[in-house]
Every structure is written in C-alpha cells, then in structure tokens.
Length: 230
Image (cartoon, rainbow, N blue to C red):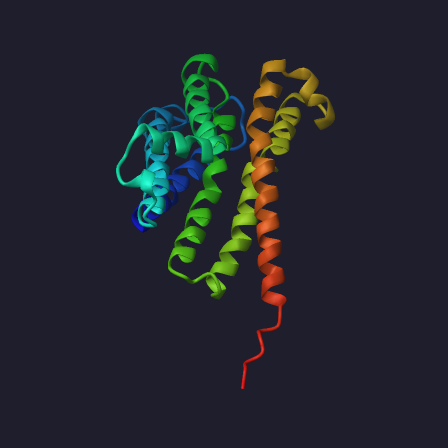
C-alpha cells in the first residue's frame, strides 16, 4: 500500500513541473498554444486516471484483506462493488475528469483555450501533499512537524489550485475581453458554467472535509497530555 501511494506522488511532482511550464509558456494569453495542452491528456492524463482508479481499488482491497475480512480473501465482483460504493464520489470524479478532459481537449475546443486547459491541469498540484500525508500516517508519523507542515500545504494548495482557480479563470477571461468579473458568467455558454460548477462542487466538499480534519487535529494537539499514574 505504501508503494501504491508513493507512485502517484512521484509522478505528480514531475508532471506538475510540466504543467506549471505549460501555464507559464502561454503567458496569460488566451490565444496562444502549447503542445502539452493536447498531448499530455492523451499520453499521460487518461492513462494515469485509469491507473489511479485501479490503485485505489488495490489499496481498498488490501486494507480489508490484511484485517482478515471474509469477503476479501480474493478479488471478486463483491469486493469491486464494495469499493465503488465506499469510494463512489472519488471514482465518479476520476471517470468524469477522464472523459471530460479527453473530450474537451480533443474534440470541442478546436485547438483553442490552452491557457484554461493548463489551469485545469494545475488542480492536481495539491495531490503530492495529500499523498505524502497518507504515507506519513501509514508510517505512524502523524505527530511529527512534517505532517503538520504538510497539512498546511494541503489546505493552501487545495484552496488555491482547486477552488480559487475558478474565479481566477473567470477574471482572466473578463480581463481579456474587457468584461467585469461579475458579468463573465453571463457571457459564457450555459454548458460552460454548468461544467465548471460540476467540477467545483466536489472540490468545495472535499475542502470542507480537509478543514474539519485539520481543526480536529489542532484541537487534539492542544489537549494536555494524560496524567501519568503513580
């Protein structure tokens, strides 16, 4: 399970360097193109999303297999169904993102909007920190300073790259066409606004969960240590 969690971290650290380069190369110009906006989705994005679903299933399976659960002695449709039911939102997110990004980058945008494709890639910038947090917990290092610092980076990168990113893209679109931010949604097709809302909604849900978890950890750290018995 540690290997499964470590692989996405290493891959996304390397990948995010390319994605930052993709966004920086267009220099905030909405009409400029970058080859990564298309080929990254085909050769890495879609295969990775497929691999990630499989890795999440293996992590789920072995979590219960090592505990000796009767239904998890071997892989079966029952274990797959249990995984999908328990992780439905994550599975739906990966499948939807896979097909959404593929269709958007290949068929509907007509070689335009590389800047926004690069911005959507940046939503994964928080993934290495989320994975590192899970690895530290598996190593029983959740009380060390690194886990606390990583928790702060998770909240920061998640908010900036998965939530604040959307109003930033609307602001950039408005700046390019001379439209005030509050009027940008009314100048875009309904499908565009609905698509952004569908992507943003689960990010807000997960961010609330992260904040609640961070707050619980903060309260736990503020509790006085239990008194030692004589």
